[in-house]
Image (cartoon, rainbow, N blue to C red; front, side, top):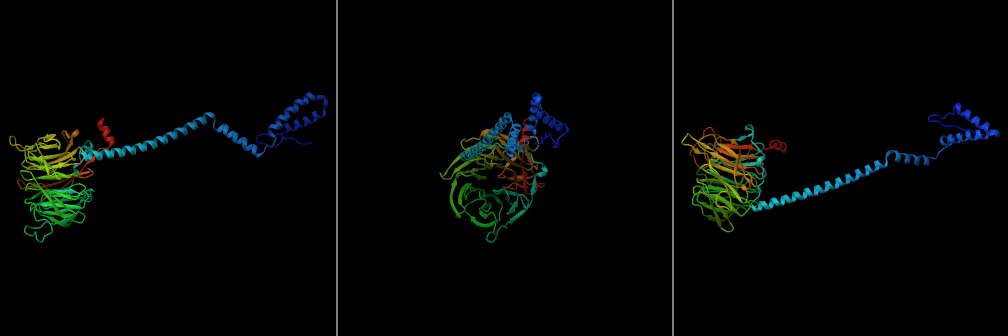
Length: 481
């Protein structure tokens, strides 16, 4: 007779109770008089044996295990939740991709719009509000010239500064190191035939937009062209009948515009070492000149009190009046707007479409002198951060309390609002913003660049590099609150 085992959880042995039950079953099977009792007992034993003792194939076990996992690991509600999350993740990825595409499209569209506005001369990036006054300790003074600095330019990549002075020398500086990288010494009067360089006060200089050429002009009516990278002398332009007071390269080309005390404007082609043409119109010595990418330049006419826009191709000019004093400096902000300064202490914002200034600030740097004999500080230099709302001005006087003032132009270039000032002892003879807008350079000296009317012994001849810090978005939000 076959044996029966009832398997309990965690135990493979047959208990005494189970053996007794089996024995009872055998006895009942042999007793025909107790059928009802045997039927009941047999039914219970069959139920127990079939549920615990029947062997199952591995396939059945695996299937049951898989069904149990499916049943217990993910309910219908959990499945819906999982599918919903997958759908949301898919939507999120699609939206992020769409946002990236939209951002790129907006970026390109914004850049194209800026280029169109720049060509039209209407671009005005509003950055002035972000500038913070620099710490006095952060302002660097670079000394190397023996006499007052008269002019300076910054290379297009903002890595180098070129400066010139009344000592007839030219120095190339490294912006980061503050060290002199190259010096072109000035010569003595009468050594023009054998000296390579200037032998008279250098009044102006310009650098081409690709950084290839450097041009300098002096009191001896000469224009010299240098290779900016090596400071090698290339050409000498002659033709002006008076001191050369202004130089500017047309942006994106090697066309050079020059202005002189002989009241004329000349156009040169540096690539071909050639003279092109001469334009006349001013009634007094020309004291400043500037240009951008259009085939035109702007000039300041000194004591004739006019600002002029010269259309080179048409050989015509536009005349603007507004200052009461001698206009000594001018700078283009964009193709349509410019700023000028005069010896009566006034600053003026101009549009090429209007004959009168859009805005004028009188006594922009205040006054000096005793009561009743007060005189305004002479505006001797202006600079503009191109295509923005930020400009700067520098003053000169017999007082050592000179400063560089930064201004914010109003919307549409209507109005000038002071931002902050930086004390600079001495005459501010030249001002230039870096192309990045990260710093401003002032050329200072003990004397004015055009004469020796006063002398400030306490001043130092050199370059002041003024860092322009900008507030972060967090600082801006805090200030806004």
